[in-house]
Length: 291
Length: 134
Image (cartoon, rainbow over all chains, first blue to last red; front, side):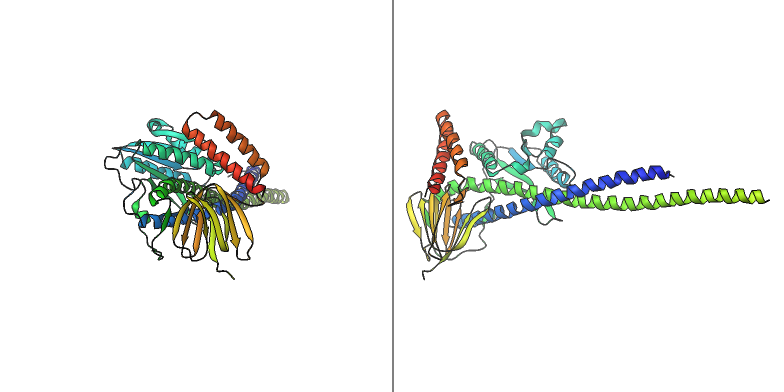
C-alpha cells in the first residue's frame, strides 16, 4: 500500500490534470460555437446551390461530361483526407483514417493518390510503405483554411480532372451531426453522381430562361459546386473535431474527478490505519507497564 | 403597395441578406436585368458589379458582388456569390491594398490564367471602391 505522502502527491498531480482538461474542454466549446455558425452558413449555401443545379440539370437534355462515368477512365483515384492537427479528441482521427485504409485495401488494382489536410493524417500515412501514396500535404491548419485556399485547391483538382490525370476524386471527412454525434464518411466529388440531382422536389413554374445558355451556366457552376462541397466538408470536419475534443475532455475531467475521490478515500484509510496502529502501540505499551 | 417577393444573398461564409423586396436590379453577363414579383423562372450568371435592391419599405440597398448566379423561381430569388458586401460595410483600406496587389500581379502575370485572375481581382477591388464612394 502506498504511503500517505505518495497518495497526497498523486492527488495533487491529478488535480492539476483535471484543471488542464477542464480548460481544454472550455476552449473546444468556445471554438465549436464559432465554427458551428460557419458550418451552418455554408450548409445554406451548398443547399441553395444544390437546388439551383437540380433545376438546371432536370431541364438539360444532354448529359454533361462531368456526370458521365468516363468509359476509359484512368485507373487513378484521388483521395482527400481531412483529419485534425492535434490528438486528444477521442477516436476522431482514427475512425476516418481507418476508413481510408479500408478503401485503399478494396481498390488495390488502382493507383491511389492522397491529398492530406491535417497533421494527424499526414503522420499516419507518411510512414512506411504507404508513404508513396501521399501526393500532397496541406500544412495550413484546417481552422485557417479560408474559402480562397479551398478555391485554389479545387481549381487545381478540376484542371487535373479535365486533363484526365485521374478518374475519380473521393473525399473522406467527418460529418457533423450533433455535439455527441458525428459520422466519418466519404463522398465522391468527381465525377458528380447523377443521383445527387434526381430531383425529388419538382418546382412548377414552367420552363426556365437561361442567360447565357444552360450549358454555359453549368460549365461555370460545376467548378463552384465542387468548391463549395469541398469547403463544406472541411468545415464539417472541423466542427466534428471540436465536438469530439470537447466530449473527450469532458470525459477526461470526469474520470479525473472519480480518481481523485478514490485516492482521497484511500488516503483517509491509510491515515486512519496509521493512527490506529500508533494508538495500539501506545495502549499495549501502557498495558505492559501496568503489569 | 407593390407586390414583394423573397430575396436572399448567400455566400459560403454567411447569409448576407434575406428579406422581402420589391425589385432587384443586377448586371447579368448578357446585360442589365431587373426582377419584379411574378418574374418568369430564370437562371442567370452575374457580373462583378453593383446590385440594387428595393426593399419592402421602398428603400434602396446597394451591394457589391463578385460575380455569381441568380435563380428566380416562384417569387423566390436566390443569389449565390463568392463574396458580397453591403453598402457601408466596405473596408476601404483593405480593398485599396488588395487593389495594389492585384495591379502588381497583373504586371507580373506570365500566362493567361494568371492575368485573368489578376484582372478579376482588380475588377472586384474597383467595384468595392465604387460602392464605398456612392
